Each structure stands twice: as C-alpha cells, then as structure tokens.
Length: 226
Ligand SMILES: Nc1ncnc2c1ncn2[C@@H]1O[C@H](COP(=O)(O)OP(=O)(O)OP(=O)(O)O)[C@@H](O)[C@H]1O
Ligand SMILES: [Mg+2]
Image 1 (cartoon, protein in one colour):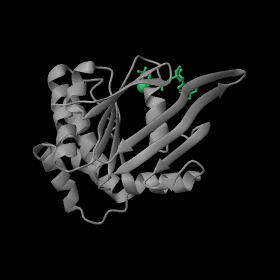
Image 2 (image 1 turned 90 degrees about the vertical axis):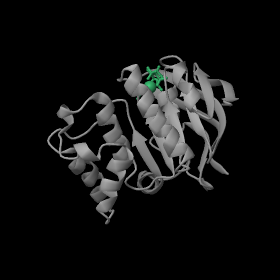
Image 3 (image 1 turned 60 degrees about the horizontal axis):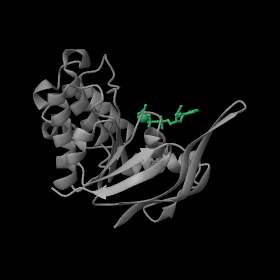
Image 4 (image 1 turned 180 degrees about the vertical axis):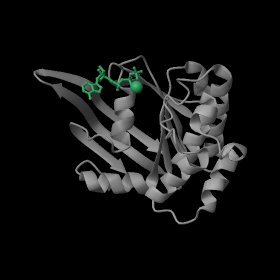
C-alpha cells in the first residue's frame, strides 16, 4: 500500500539574497512495507527530504501525499496533529532529558501524546531491552542504550511510520548493529514503515530498499534482496 508520495517536489532555502536549491524535482513513492534507507554524501539533502516526507518542512513546489491526504497545504496545526498520531522520530543525538530517569523520559512522551496506559512505557522498555535500566539517568547509560530509550520514546503513540536521521551516527559498530537490528525488528515483526537516513553503506543491508541522493536528486532506487 502506498503511504507517502512526492510529486515533482522541490525544496529551496532562502538565506538573505542567497537561495539554495536543496531538493530538485523529487518523485518518490514510499510503501507501507518499506524499510527505506536514504543515503548520499553530506549536504546532498537527506535530512531535508526526511523533514519534507514527515511534514516537518513544507516543499517549495510540488506535492506531498501522505495516507491518501494531500498535506502540501496543511497548516502547522494539521501537520502537528498528523505527526502526533502517525509518526515517530529518532535522531542522531538522543535528546533525552538529563534529570529524568529512563522510565520518566518515556512516560513524559506518553503524557504529551495523551496516552493513558502507563503500562505501555514498561512494555516498550522491555521491547528495546532497557527494562532493567528504567531507573537510571541518561548519563549513566552508553550511547547505544540511550538510543534504545529514544526508540522506545518514539513508539509511545504507536506510530505507523518511524523516521530516523542517522540514528547510528554517534555509535560504534557494535552498538550501531544493535540499533539497526532493532529497527529491522520494528519493520518485520511490528510491520512499521521505517525511513532511515544513514551515511554508512554497511547499514543498508538492514533495509528493504534504499535511495541515494546526490546534489538533491535521487540517483538510485533499489530493492535490497536478502
Ligand atoms: N534551514 C536551512 N537554511 C539554509 N540552508 C539549509 C537549511 N537546512 C539545510 N540547508 C542546506 O541544504 C543542503 C542539504 O542539507 P541537509 O541537511 O538536508 O543535508 P544532509 O544530506 O542531511 O547532510 P549531512 O549528511 O551532513 O547530514 C545543505 O547545503 C545545507 O547547507
Ligand atoms: Mg543530515
């Protein structure tokens, strides 16, 4: 099933007199069974593409369709509602709140998402293998552990789609592989759609498909067979 579509989508940034053409005429369909890797050199537009696909940024031209809705002209509030109900985010830096415990960090996200069932916090921490560390503070955890908590946090609203921007960018290889295995599990066992930006071609084998961006254009779109 088709989940997100970009039609002739371009994105420019204007800084004073200087206009940067970041994404150029992107046509892309993301299906619900995709674990889509986005790769490409620094500055090629990976993060910007992720922001437009997730409704964090509006395109300068072209259209974005998500879940059969044309979100191109959505207001900030409509986009925020869509993100709150359908989308989870994971970033390179875990952005955990330092003076809250692991459990409190995930609970806060649940409260913000207006979730009522506190037991979900413990279920998610168990799922990411962090239940036994639930009373620790972020600075008492390794980077990989903090990222697992951030992944649990991204799941409080039971999102259909998870966007991850270089979630392994700050981790060593062992922790990076663990995090990729976790995303793989969210895709295969929980049937979530994953859209994941990565610098490292080594991690593409965890994806079901990848696109490569160069200079704001998709130069490659391949299904990965395992
Ligand atoms: N808010 C902004 N204002 C102006 N220019 C921007 C803005 N955000 C990104 N850019 C420019 O857009 C281009 C693409 O940036 P983007 O962050 O999407 O690249 P990236 O592929 O994610 O790079 P990296 O691998 O370094 O994270 C860069 O030239 C960047 O300077
Ligand atoms: Mg980036």
